[in-house]
Length: 156
Image 1 (tube, rainbow, N blue to C red):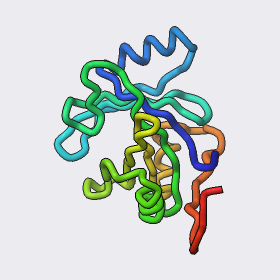
Image 2: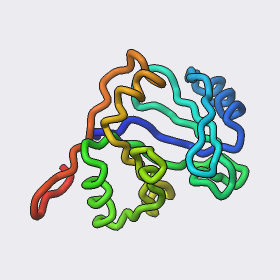
Image 3: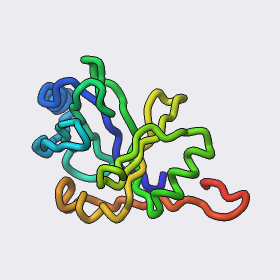
Image 4: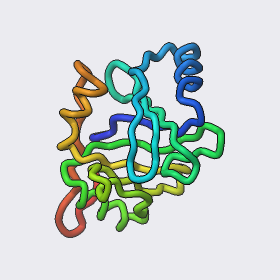
């Protein structure tokens, strides 16, 4: 599946989730990093190695990553060469916008996919080099999803 590079879980305790998954399936983690977007402080970590990655994010309740005290599937992440066109395509397909990072200077958008009980995240491919440097030095290829264009164009 072109562009898919991670699956994310929102968790109440990132350290506990990292420890449990490390013991259960042997994954290794980047150290968690603290960040802020809008009014929300959060912590985030990714598995080491090649994609697809597992992302864990711990955010406060009433934030885009609030989890009600229990871990949950949050989103599937895809790189896109055209964030606006990709977001419009998802909305036309009935996968409506849920949270837009762009007003906060972050080139990503979440769209709610009710059929999977989570979201699809589109991330601007212009961030790929920064992602590699911060989270995935030496990782394998991460393809970019290019939205289809023109009348009747479909994902294929």
